[in-house]
Amino acid sequence: MARPTILQFRDIYYPFLAAFGVPANLLTIVILSRGNCGLSKCISVYMVAMATADLLVMIFNVIVYHICTYHFPHSFLSYTAVCKFIIYINSTSLNTSVWFTVLFTADRFVAICCQKFKTKYCRVKTASAVITTLSVLIYFQCLPFWFAYKFERIIHNIHWGCRPRIDFFISPAGVLFSWMISVLTSLFPFALILLFNCLTVRRILLASRARRGLRGHSIENQSDPEIENRRKSIILLFSVSGSFLVLWLTPFVSFLTTGLSNTAHYRGDYTAPAYIAMETGYMLMYLSSCTNTCIYAATQTKFREELKKVVKFPWTWILLLIKK
Image (cartoon, rainbow, N blue to C red):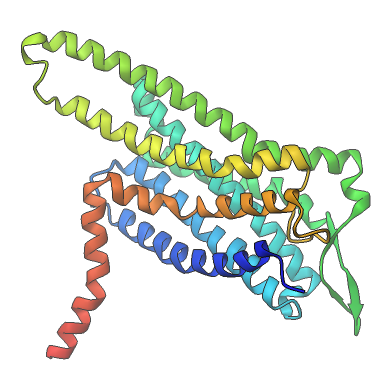
């Protein structure tokens, strides 16, 4: 009997995703850390944090979980303690990736719409403190995952595998925890990003109209550096947040309609529409951890220039060694 198409596709999809996502996020971290992209230090901190979170998603969620664990079910990764750690770190990686995107959107909202609060909030120290505090909260929030799974079997007095604890997930605390994770990972971030974006657009449109009115009709067609900077800011903001909303929409809707939230432990019909929808949602969700590098390269001229320098550097160094 032939394997279901969705399983054949995921066998190809995840290795290709990891092959692109890991170096892309590493390059993003290196380029942004150099500080030569013409961005403020504050926004660079948030963008580096986003790239770091996306890199962790690529390593743990895609490579370790969806590739190694899936294709090598009898390796040390199947020890119950290791398996629990992988599930825990997968959840924390996804949560930090989501909420760092929210922080990035909030930072742009404050920088554009809250001029009085901007000098206090849009600082490197504040950004670092906010990112650190949120990361600690997320790691504590996901601690129940350690107790939500138990071993599947015992071989030579060693606990193997992980399976959900039914008594935990049907308990009021387990149901609350499951829905809290879903709400805090998708619904609440969706709402915040949409709210910040709507308020930011409204502010930019009002400010642009007022600026054109002050400049007068005689020079209306001339380029305005301030309006151009705002245009670039809103393109970057909408590209990052819009990509996140589109790619995370499918898994969120699939969870609400099917109730299926973990395809890795699925034991049903692999041709069922509910499973196919949820698996497709996961693929798009992990794809969102690779798109930011492409967005930066497409919207930021200086980022493209730095990217070319970083990519060319190893080859230039090799050519110099050959000549010597």
